[in-house]
Length: 137
Image 1 (spheres, rainbow, N blue to C red):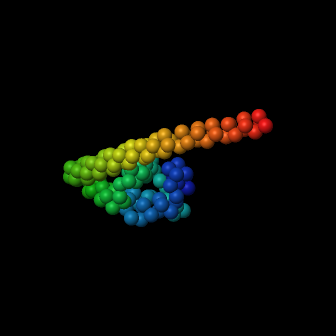
Image 2 (image 1 turned 180 degrees about the horizontal axis):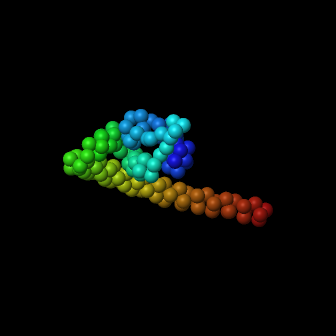
Image 3 (image 1 turned 90 degrees about the horizontal axis):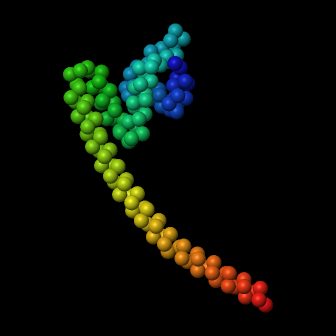
């Protein structure tokens, strides 16, 4: 699969894919006879994993460390698990913070709605009365 096809499939720019390869975030991509990158389904699985982790906010440095550990083989399974567990715990904490922020925003919005809607109704009422007075004249 060409870099253009992978870029379109995962909605990631070609420059980002090259960068991920250059820094070791995804394994080295094999090349075809013309020297163009030729992505395999295994490469695509790595890209999908990295995109998912990045979307969740995991730092590139952590993901590079994970990839390096993975490449070292089964003796790093425990280290990889610990790395992912720590990232999960950090993500849970962020989600709790975001939930608290969401609740605060909802409260503020509701407060504004409770203050604004009665004022709007009051203004509508006074306009209607003004219009009726004008019609009566």
